[in-house]
Length: 62
Image 1 (cartoon, one colour):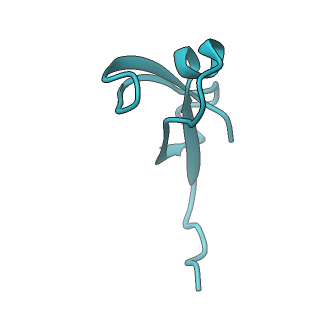
Image 2 (cartoon, helix red, strand yellow):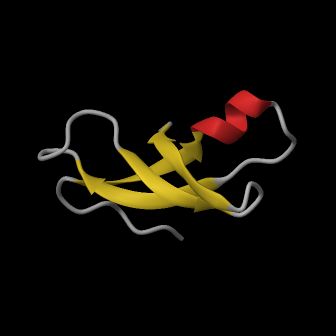
């Protein structure tokens, strides 16, 4: 059973923007947490995409 979130930290899903735009099959997604009080806008980080085999920009989707 999943634990209930404590305080302002929430779990988010990040998805690769380059892979999504290219139309290739599969997706590159990462699950992480952020503090919703300090970071109100959507998070955007450079992460490794194993399908494209390079660092790409991943944006928050949820």
